[in-house]
Amino acid sequence: MALSLSSRTDVNRTAILAHLGANGPASRADLARRLGVSPALITQLTRDLLADGLIEELDHASSGGGRPARMLGLVARAASAIGVKVAPDHVAFVEVGIDGTVLRSATQDFDAVAPLAISGLVDVLRAFIDSGDSTLVLGVGVGLPGTVHEQGVGVVDSTQLRWNQVPLGATLRRALDLPVVVENNVNALSVAEKLFGQGRDCEDFLVVTIGNGVGAGVVSGGSILRGTAGGAGDIGHVPVVVDGPLCQCGNHGCLEALIGQGALVNAGRAAGVLGDGDGIDGLRAAADAGDERAQQLYADAGALFGRTLAGVVNVLDPQLVVLLGEGVAAWRHWAPAFEPALRASLVPGKRGVAVAVESWQDDRWAQGAAALVLATPFDADGIAGEQGRLVRERLVSTATVR
Image (cartoon, rainbow, N blue to C red):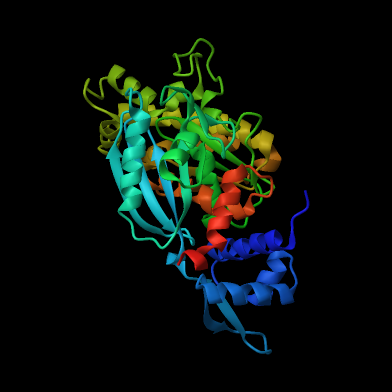
């Protein structure tokens, strides 16, 4: 069905805000060029956004001799989004401004397998939302380890959380009366990288995480590649060893079963580096202290990771690979074996692919989930469905709400 003039205008207003949030201040001429609309329409739309208090005029930009252009920027607190990271033993919350800046955050213990896990999640999420002072919450984004067929529906299958066909999206929408989008946590991180991170200027890149599991978000042509059921990029379950250790997915020899945190801890205990009560922090501390056994475990993991990732790069041909996750805290022990294994296993034309290792904080997962809400203006394929439309409606009605 064709868009009406008013709905086209709403989408363009939202696209202006999203562009300013992702790329920083811009002139009206820059916005017209980047968004592919006429200068006259940009002038009209930015006039409305200025009147609504969503954007503000900043200093003039220098020019090459002509009249300096007036720059436009966001009023970051005009609206916000809530991001939720769900892990087996805790949940992390953030509230972010429309420019992606984290305004506040919190962490709460959580037991994903408890009989009342979902109702408990509702309670702590509602309390976090109510404790804020945002003028308008656009919606809630939830990132979790698992498969989500449709963001706007939010039915979850997760081996890590032990959830099977959990209707998380519908439950949260009923309880909170807010738009809710749900996505695999690495896909959510990839959205954040596209909007605010190193992927802003890349159309084709990978976001790869190491930690409890191993996952990848695939950005192709500027869009997240989700696959038939939302499970694209699940490289942790690439089979790498015949008759290898049992993976939580039920198969044997998956990459995750060999280099995930649980696998490294088990290997550390078997090697006598760790005691029964020690975890991944103890293994990293041992490696930092010069324990050759611990360092060798990381080296073996790094080599296997590099070789497997090379296969993914050979298939997908990304411009950039961004490495993230809890595991990068020990990256100096992974890297010496990872780099040569990766480069040696790439086909010649791809050996120069850039690899960026980013520092890690736990709330990055939740920030990625919030980016799902902020990304709805870019949702040309309708992945967020009805929830994306509701987010856009809330954004353009901010002036009325205020």
